[in-house]
Image (cartoon, rainbow, N blue to C red; front, side):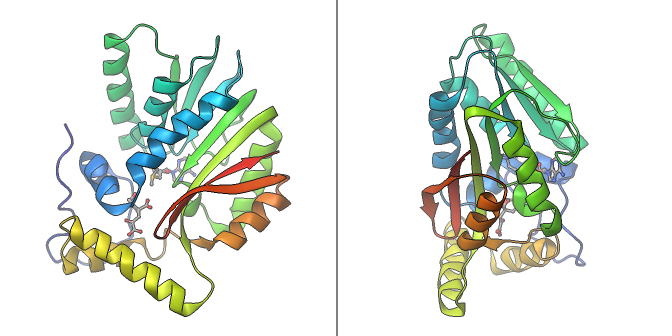
Length: 245
Ligand SMILES: C[S@@+](CC[C@H](N)C(=O)[O-])C[C@H]1O[C@@H](n2cnc3c(N)ncnc32)[C@H](O)[C@@H]1O
Ligand SMILES: O=C(O)C(=O)C[C@]1(C(=O)O)C=C[C@@H](O)C=C1
């Protein structure tokens, strides 16, 4: 079972956020209390993927963490011969993700097969992809590498495939940015985070999680070769887009 997130509860020297063992221990609680709409997004990624999954293809969960999206894919996708490839570059995440998924395997025989790969999504080759999910992962990739990654993902998609991209977004005008950021902080407070926890996590994320505006996402996805780009969900400053070749 995952623990309650108290990682930033006591004063600590500033350090960049990493997906280490401490984060892994509390991650399900952390992400649910930090990302408005997260459970809705995850479940519906499974529902959406079911429409695009093709027989004998692969479904990719990039930056899979503990495999929440992989599990949603397994709940909803029934295409014959399809397998899930879940990739993350955090050893701690991959180790725990494998444990969760093999516990699931031992209870249900009919689930899609899953391969959990420890690797860098900027380097691992992808093939025969009908669905690619990037659920709050692109925001952790260096901005100058984002277009190259999305272009490679576009070229790995089979005709009729889909990219599902969820991100925290920022807003081009300062007033809207202040409003939505303030509402997100209210969401965190309502979920029991203190001012100290909120402030220390913000500092930890400052250099490692760099957000774009919706217009920047749209332009970049189009530059990468996607012709349809549509947000299917937004809750405060968190959105999920579907992008089609
Ligand atoms: C916010 S978490 C993703 C949450 C997860 N997709 C979910 O829905 O629960 C971001 C993940 O991306 C992973 N990550 C960041 N950069 C990566 C890279 N270059 N290659 C692979 N994984 C990466 C991190 O280790 C982390 O587990
Ligand atoms: O924006 C924030 O304050 C967050 O905590 C967001 C966020 C994310 O979007 O990935 C950052 C790190 C954790 O993985 C959980 C949530």
